[in-house]
Length: 159
Image 1: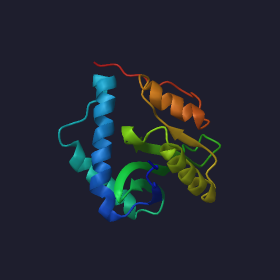
Image 2: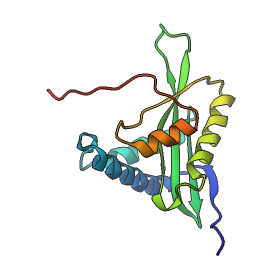
Image 3: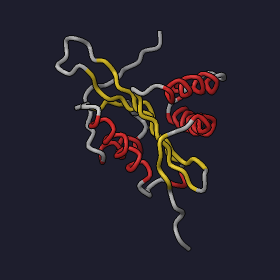
């Protein structure tokens, strides 16, 4: 049996619903790791609106991986302004990367990241930031393999 052909490309408007479904899968995974990461019942509606806007905005990078025209993963990267106190004026921010569990460990996430990295370099971005749950050891290991390291801890207190 041969491996399926995985195609990589920039997103189109027709991809939004499938990407929202993947985002919701990711949200469920994160909620299972830590209940504080739960999202509102109407989250899909807001994510759909957010992603629809990003697709038309040239200052963001949004790509998908698909098999037989079924989207199996995505990456969403933003270019963000840095505060004037920092040396860098802008940096990349990985807003999301998700690959369906049955396609993990096949290089899909790495390829999506490499595509985004190339795009960021073309836009003269010199650093990339992201957040990963402190309880997401799979995500932490993936990002460590991509060359990321801890910079700060995001802490939360419920009041």
